[in-house]
Amino acid sequence: MVESNYDILGIVEGTTERDIRDAFRRLALQFHSDRGGENDQFIKIKQAYDDLKIGKKYPDTDIEKIKNSRVYSDESEEDVRRKNQILGQELSKEMKSAEEWATTLNQSNSTATRLFGSKTLGEIELERKATGTLSIKGNFMAGSLTYDGPIIMQGSITSPSWTQEFKTNIHLTKGDFKFINPLENKYKIENGARIIVDNGNVVVGNIYGRKYRVEDKDGRVGVFQIQEHRTSISALNGKIIAEDISNTVSLDADTIIVLNVEQDSVLLAREILFYGEKLTFDSVIKLRKNGTIRFFEKFSIQGLSGDAIIELENGKKIRLFDLKTKKIKDLSDELISHKENYDKDATLVGNGFTITYDMLDNLSKKQETKQKSNWSSKFRFSKNS
Image 1 (cartoon, rainbow, N blue to C red):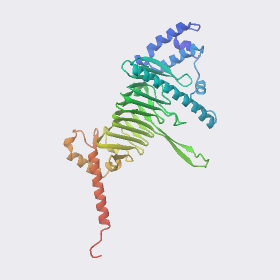
Image 2 (cartoon, one colour):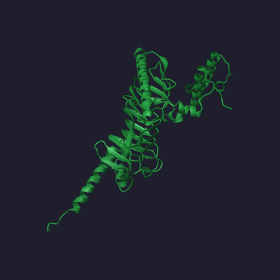
Image 3 (cartoon, helix red, strand yellow):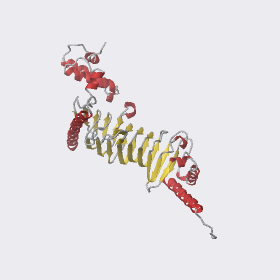
Image 4 (tube, rainbow, N blue to C red):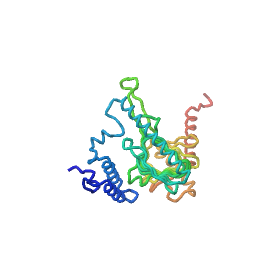
């Protein structure tokens, strides 16, 4: 038997509008995530309430949900692009209004809550709290938002694939940007979105970019072009704390703390801490001067991909492979000679290890000296020749 919207709210058909509203409020208090409830159940209750307000007895079926999707995909490519362009434009207008609304409240130090968007575009709730924090509930899908203060968010962030004009950009001029329980709620940032935090930290979940092949625009058979939607997060004066980083992502911060890094991801920081055991697919670690890289992997450097590159601020590049093979002894000797500068667990095996900028720079110099020596001896001529 199909569950009706009345069943979802626990009321009988024919109930008054007031009773419907009271039932929704009672269940919302019970299941709202702010009160420790289940987010999926709250969404279901909210949708049932919205449906009953317009006289809709049953929730959408899976097929109806696809037909009512905010992204059109069952028509010609030209029609899809045109309709999605309109949606992106409308979403961007809504976020512009949201930005102006939040700025006005900030300037007057007022509190308020307001919904932006619509059922067609997708609703997003903004609340300016007494502390100056801006709370965002819902998925951020297109447009720009600048805010002079902290942001806490319940929802995922994406960016339109069909246009760069309405690309998602979130900019905090001060304060932290944080997801609420990102791992538990599976919130993510993806598809080329950008977050910039001028003076604060970023605490999020998984971060994904997007890179894919498209057919040649001139119609040449077997010829493809690569389109890239690089997701980027910047916190130059703070930390970025995230889980998995994958598929065309760039992070730039003073300190970066991550789990796993894969597939054309770039990390630029003074201090980088890895808690996972994946560093693969042409990923690049860019280390600032006087910086450190700390691996907390349980085994050893042998568990990490040799394809990854460590690039120093002075432009020198070192393959992780070089640290895993014959060059590891040089690094170990360098570590021992500077042991007083590190904690007792800073070894190349066991519960983790630390690599410093100076150690890598010195290792690079030794490699260069050795190469020059090899070339010199190879082409040396005797005095009698």
